[in-house]
Image (cartoon, rainbow, N blue to C red; front, side, top):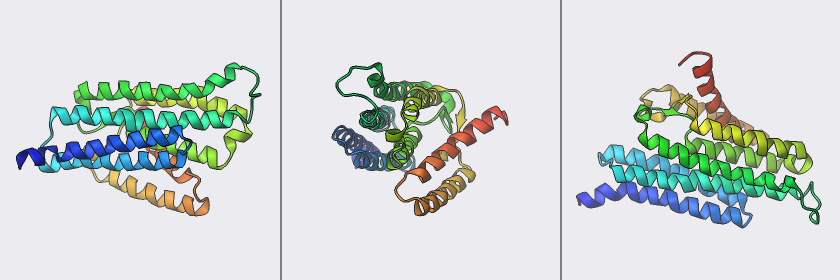
Length: 242
């Protein structure tokens, strides 16, 4: 009975990993909406595996390592693949398919997200300062930010209409996200034991719903939520010195 109880969080973590695998598969087949859905589902499993482990009192080193391995796929490779195909598909609106160009390499910058996510997770496992909070942007939050950004740009046809925006996404936004993953800026966690992170979550969900009703299926609401999360962390660190 104890063995079953001990492995319940690990089973939830494996559900996270399976969702990440399906997300990658859908992204490769051009189903970016489906990929985003499975990444979101993976994030739900990622929240509940740690929550369940703490409630059952069965946290273990193997669970921690398994969680990081799952997160590399679900919140590193999956969003990177999704972003790659979004950039690649929209690039065809701007180039001559019969002419080779260095511009065609732009989508490959998206895979830096996978590499830096893996580095962040390895760093997180060894960093004892991140027990109740985060230093740098957590990989699930980064994945959600990419989903919001990708759906907003795609649904509004911005990348198809503006090559400069596609170039800026590949050469500026992607490096910025990579920096956020490994920087030393504190980001709040729901493990802090404070009420205001939950107030933030409820507030951003309300904002997301309002924006979604105003501009359906654009992903703008989720993007606003995640930018607010990053903005709070940067403001607390650089302006308030926390």
